[in-house]
Length: 154
Image (cartoon, rainbow, N blue to C red; front, side, top):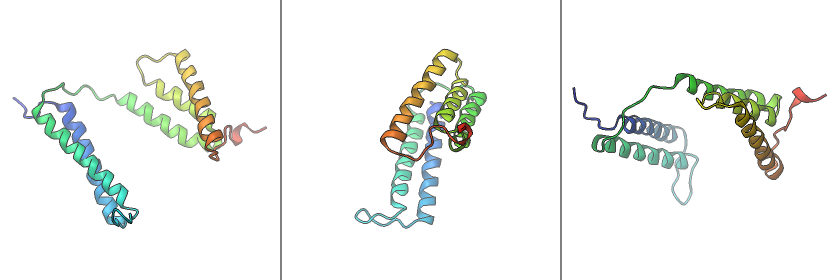
């Protein structure tokens, strides 16, 4: 049986963009005042962004019907779960453990999702990310994020 969808990967990514874009459009127009370009309301930016996302999704869906491409591979359930779990750990740990421990845990858990996981490169990445985030967010921007939280106070 032949399918009219010539590029399933682009088709489903287009559908995803279209759904999120339309959802943003609907939510922004129901809950927030839109305003106009000269005097923007709180719903103006989400409405414009949602519309652009929906347009990109529609273009991707149309292209998937015209241009051939590769099929869908398997959905990486374990990998997606580990990445989402790492984001959850960051949110839970950042206030109580601090920025550095939460970045280390997030980097290790999300890196474990890769088939090319190696401890040495993961720890180097975690250390580099910690230095970068402390310098940018704590030192330069002055955000009130504890580098080491109450769990590490003696």
